Image 1 (cartoon, rainbow, N blue to C red):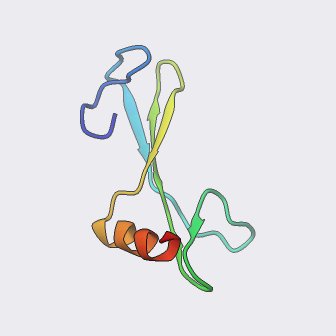
Image 2: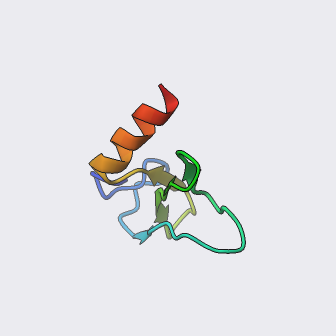
Length: 70
C-alpha cells in the first residue's frame, strides 16, 4: 500500500496514512531501540476494508533497528 497506493486485500485506492507518535502514557506501537530511543512505524490504512500495513519509513530508523537487533 505504501508504494502502490492500492489495498492488497480489496484493491481500493481509498487509503489513509497515520504517522506514529511518541506518547507519554504508553508505548503504543513504537519499537524500542535502546534505553531512550524509539522508532515510530507509519500505518497505512484502507478506508474501504480496514486492512492495515505498518512501515518504517525513514532510512535512518531502519539503520538504528538493524544495529539494535543484530
